[in-house]
Length: 421
Ligand SMILES: *Cc1c(COP(=O)(O)O)cnc(C)c1O
Image (cartoon, rainbow, N blue to C red; front, side):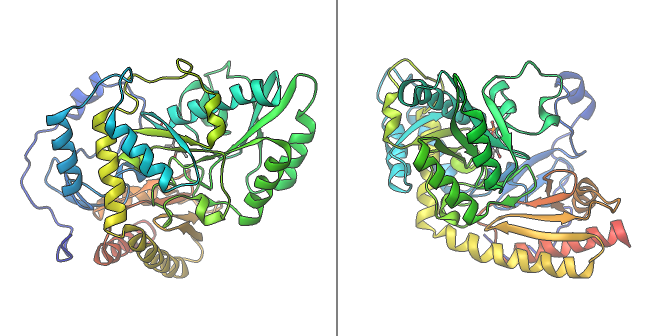
């Protein structure tokens, strides 16, 4: 990446006449959108249909690991579409085997099931848990514990797992078999396991994010997670880490669990795994052999295209020593955000995160919201995404440069000046 691009000025003329109105007439209104349309990207930059350039610190929400139009992805996408892009899991798929082998070699898990998204990876984990509960733990009505402020996806089972009422409202009846505990509070887990093990009911798994992403960029406590591991060892309850957002190098380690020094029994991955090509995965220890042929499947899951590209992403992370960049750029970013926090002590209450998943929290009692800051940042040429009403999230591509972090910090400072004078 060039470090010379020091400006965030409009560049090329409009190349595409974008029609918002036509878009809104034809596309369902499930998303709140910012009033720009992006049509081109390179590295950590994207351009809108007016030719305006932005630094992309959203990266498709922690997804475009290698940024935009990375040569390794261009090569892999081109190769796979020319060679073979989709066949059924009725047959062996070499790229799927290679990607699974890479993931197993680079994690504490033993086998992989491939799907297409984070929610599907969690669905697979929920099904595996239920079979384990029925066949190993002899629990007739298994319960999965999840944490308040968590996020696990938008299918019916995963909005039920997501312990945030705003995602569940009006979609009941929800899926049975979930119960909620506060995050980073071990006494609550212990109490829940004690109370819920009654009659046909029993806790079969704890599904939890090593760092809560959507829920406000909240890192897990090491001591809490160690105790979770211990109680799971003692009871046979499965420990499932949802690493859809924090995994695949974003934390500065390949997996979030390495930040905590605690191994899960099941791990789910998606967002960054394909660098922006849709792919999800559930990784599990060997007990997953309780799954029999025909018990779980996905038409697109593990196709040669997605697996070939994801493998290129994985190998690039390794070859280009990207985790070292994530650590260094993450420290630089947090240091800059803390300086800004010191400048606005009445507004900014906290800066936190691991590697290149970071959050800046605004005080509850000030009027300013994360959306206000995100809107002001867009005007300054910086794309950011809220993580709830008070937290601004920073999840740039893992290849972001030192110069680009500095540019982003300058743009953010201008945005704060604009909203607060
Ligand atoms: C985004 C996310 C999901 C859902 O992933 P989709 O691909 O949108 O289904 C699940 N868990 C976590 C932690 C996420 O951040």
